Length: 231
Ligand SMILES: NC(=O)c1ccc[n+]([C@@H]2O[C@H](COP(=O)([O-])OP(=O)(O)OC[C@H]3O[C@@H](n4cnc5c(N)ncnc54)[C@H](OP(=O)(O)O)[C@@H]3O)[C@@H](O)[C@H]2O)c1
Image (cartoon, rainbow, N blue to C red; front, top):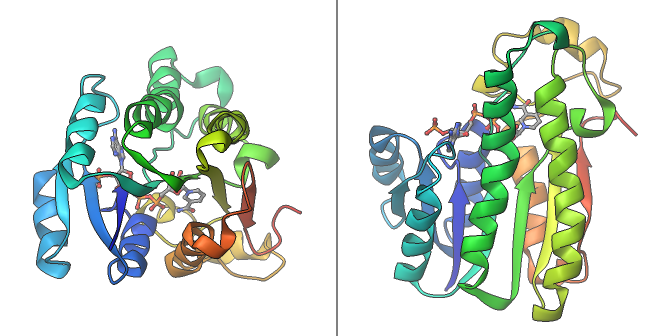
């Protein structure tokens, strides 16, 4: 069976991805909290779990060890992330740094550490966001981190191609998870041509598609799943 690392498997989108991968992959799932991993293990007994926090630099080694323990892996999905909603002039330096650290810098470190443990023809998929291209009032650090991720994906795709490893991003629009629960869904939906937010399962489907070996000629791409919000 193929092996996959899903970072942020405890989140709304991460868990939908885990559900999709569970039958076909040996999965290593991460969360920042052991109790969330215990709950995932109750639901998906065959997964391996590891506590991982992007803000702790030494934990890139934790990932390296976790991946090494399951043997060469075929797929890395980074479905973790935070927002830091504030108008630019009010955003603190600390919050800027934390958002870039969690969403961008740590993803790079993690990929760098896990790369050597990947099988040829493996695939790496990161979760970006529609605001990485579109921008959004009050989300300067978040949108910068996601724009950075997409640029990083294009460079890693070029560098890793010689090993047959593809690197892509999935960029959801507003999706029904904890991350968006403070928004007014009715108002938001009016901005979206398809008239509604995405379900986590719809985003997970895009990840599963990119992970499929039949998609192995796609690399350096960002797949938009946003109901037409940005096109
Ligand atoms: N929901 C949306 O509308 C939307 C739209 C566009 C893009 N996205 C992107 O999609 C991804 C998943 O979002 P979601 O909606 O599923 O969010 P969510 O339900 O809030 O889940 C966030 C996930 O990130 C993990 N995480 C948070 N801080 C972390 C840290 N310091 N270290 C490691 N993991 C950390 C969480 O782990 P714990 O549970 O252990 O804390 C959780 O698994 C994110 O990259 C997000 O930016 C979401």
